[in-house]
Image (cartoon, rainbow, N blue to C red; front, side, top):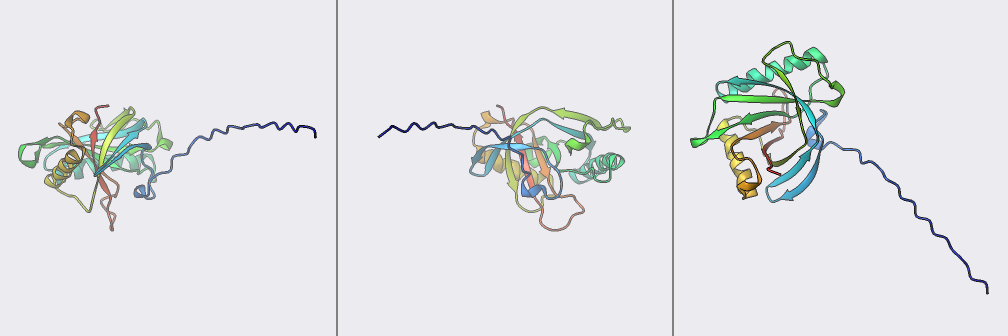
Length: 196
């Protein structure tokens, strides 16, 4: 009986994974990320480089964020009627007694098809290229509309992480994925920048 020689060839196929946006983005584009860690009461995500348009306003949370949202939305409307993307993010600096410094900075994500975006004609609006970053994130149930409620959510995120050496604790971000005029179930998050 003659020996049978079998040659085995292995073929390595490398497929670039295509990012699939999560369901909470709805019909809008949102920034790409990968999940680094799933903790109890939080996620740690790694976000790719993204372009954001931003502006600030002083006053109460409701008045300031209404002003900033309108300014940024008007900027996007000048670009394209389909320019809106999510989330819209507000930076907050908590202080004693669940108060927040009366100055809010809001950011709108600029979807890749609009990059590079044109320079705003309003000098209070700027374009920022945000480098890759790690974020600790807590999903916020229901509709949150006051600073005290947002600070409470940030404190719950801090408690879930349970290690202040892992994130910047002097500020946090709120991320909203539902446009204010939309009705129905809302999806929001609170974010901390990770130290590493």
